[in-house]
Structures are given as structure tokens and as C-alpha cells.
Amino acid sequence: MKRSTVMVVLAAFLMTCPGFFFPNVVRGADPVIIGVPTSLYTPFGSYGLKAVNLAVEEINAKGGVKVGDVKRPLKVVVADTRGGEPGTPVHDALMAYEKLITGEKPHAIVIGAFRSEVLIAAMDLVAKYKVPHLGTIAQTPGFQAQFKKDPAKYKYLFRVTTDALVDATYIAHTLDMLKKDFGLNKILYIYQDTAWAKAFAGLMQKHCKENGWTETGFEPYAAGATDFSPALSKAKESKSQVIGMVWDVPLGAGNFSKQYVAMNVPALLVGFIPPMGSPLAPKAVGPDVEYGITVEFPVGATLALAKLPKTGEFLDKFKKKYGELPEPPAVNSSAYDSVFVLANAIERAGSLDPDKLTEALEKTDYDGVSGKIKFDQNHVMIFGEKSAEETGVCVVFQWQKGKDGNLKRVPVYPEFLAEGKVQLPPWMKK
Image 1 (tube, one colour):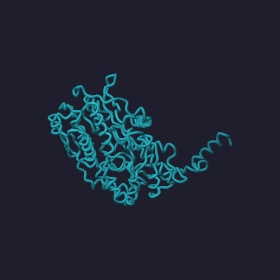
Image 2: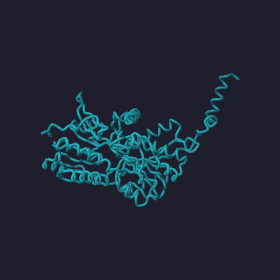
Image 3: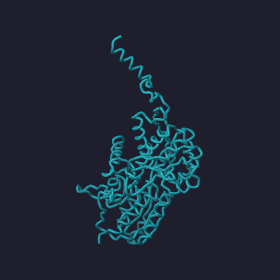
Image 4: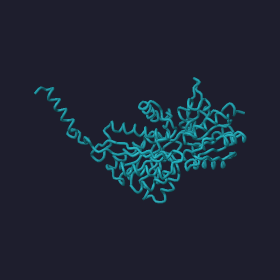
């Protein structure tokens, strides 16, 4: 037999028997199923899913995740809960959650509920089926409150992102900076009447009251609202210097942005308004996004930071795969990180047993795009404002014109991530 023929036969043999030379890789090994029940209507859900798929692709390209002595591929299964669509009952979203769990039998869940009300309701469902759950969108501090009631029951649930109080704290400290540097002290709040946004706006309000700000309005709107002109008119009439805005529903946020621009409201926008924080904002909203200040939570969601190279690496890979940056300035990096946190825990546990996997997740110490990922006693990722090597971190940025005349997002807080100073609009300068 010729040598070339022998080599062909040997190669064919090895392809059918990979375990002969690579005992840790099993051909046709059962996949590790990752469930993603979330609201695909929202950019947070749809772009988060893209981030998850990117992470899965990277892990599978290296042979998958090691479970005991066997390398197994990851497989993503998805259920659209529609929980982010205004008017969708929580019950309907829960049905989609349960159908995914019972039908696809995922070994773990990532991303999870978009709306906080759905997350709180789903906690009992997750506990019932004992599925490790790494949530990366819903922001209500109510998660911790519910967890504390029965830690043994809810031990399968983790939050691999911020909550509303973290985001609001970053904005509150940015407001301190505006007060100190520019003397601003009159604020009107507009917020979405949902659990996470109430908590966010409530912390801002409390902080400002304690630090000498004058409140000119505290205006809640239903999640399906599309007309914000009454609150914007009130801001103009009261000569508010700052509008603290908290919103996540795409339609309402888009309409608010357009109305704010059209009505020429002479107040600085500070808070979380996705269309005005998106990298697409100069085209989607227009040049009047200039001077708007937004918190991105956590870092790496859409903005590459010079001082945190991992943010740029993730976003470069995302853009290479999908041809664009993520749209919403929040939680995309959380979704990406969650897959690696899960894979890391599986390998340390050496098992897909939910109790062993939960124990491994509790001991997580992972350097992610969003910073150091560790969990506190309530299974919530720990955040701070001083170092991405110690905790997860967020960033506050402002739209400013560069030397080339183009708008860009300039990190202004916290200090260790800042790449510039806040600029006050000409129409606000004394």
C-alpha cells in the first residue's frame, strides 16, 4: 500500500475515532443547553442574544466546555417572552419561560427577563425547576429583597449585571459634579412607571434632596407612553437646568428624544435614555444629542474605553461578526460575560448538577469585559466606582464635538475612566 493511501486511511480512522488521540473530546457529545428566555422586541434582548451567541461561538471554537473529563459544545435555545412589549401580561411572559424550561430542558439560563416585574414573578418558577439562572437585564433591587426571604429556595438565581441603584448612584455622583463645577441645582425628573425605573429615579430624587437641589417636578409616565410634552413644558416653564430622565421602552424613548429636540427645552439631559446614548444617536436622533449625558451600564456595552482594553476587544469582535456595534448602551457586555461565567463554573464544578453548579457560581472570581465579576451574599454582582480590577464598573459619558466636528461619546465619570470633562451647553453658560 502506498504511503499516501495509508495516510488517507489513517486520517479517516482518526476522524471517526477522535477519542483515540484526544481522550477529552467525544465526537457527538451531548451539548450543554443554554436557555435564553427574554423579550426580543427590545434591543436589550435582541442584542444581548447576539452577544451570547458570540460568546458561545468562541467557546465552541476551542472545543466547548469541559464537563468532568469530556468536552461538550454549548447550544443556545431561545424563547421570546414578549415581556418588554407594553401591555404584555406578566403571566404570558411566565408561560414562555416555563415552556422553555420544560420543553428544552436547559442546563442553565442566561439573560432572562427584560422587565423587572417578570423577573420577580419568575424567581419561584426557576426555584421550582432548579435551573441556574444568570440574569443580565432586569434591574430591580426587588430581586435582592425577594432573595433574602428564602436564600435556600432562590439560590439558583444570580444577577450578572447592575441593578437600578448602581446605575442611579453613578448618575447621582455626576449630578454632584455638575453642581460643584457649574452651580446647577434645579432638576425635574421624568421616569417610566416600572419597578426598576422607580428605584432609579427614587434614588436620584433622594440624593438631590440631601444635597441641595431644588426639585421642579417628579413625573411618572406609563411604559407605553409616547407623549412627554406636558413634562417637557413644565421643565421649560420652571426653568429647570437638568432633566433626570429614566426610560427603556424603545418607542417611548425615541419619541421623548424627538420631542425634547423639537421643543428646544433649555435643560441638560442626564440619565438613561437609550436612543440618545446609542452609538447611532447622531443619525437616529440628530445633532441635538450634543451635551446629553448618559450612564452606560456596565462598561463595554457599546463604548470602547481607552483604559479598559477588554471593552474594545469585545466590541471589535461584535462588530466583525454582526457588522455593527450593539445599539443599547447597557447590558450587552453582561450577556457576553454571563456565558463565560457559566462555562467557568461548569468546569470548576465538573458537573451540570444544578446544586454543584450553583456552589461553583457562588465562588465566581472572573475578569470580564464589565470588570471583576464576583457575587455578594444575595447572588448580585458587586459594583464600585474605583477599579475594574476589584469590582464591576459603569461609565457616564457626554456627547461632545471632536476636533473634526463630529459628535463622539466622551467618558466623564468615574474619574479613573474619564477621557474628558463635562461641557456645559452655550445656552446654559452664565
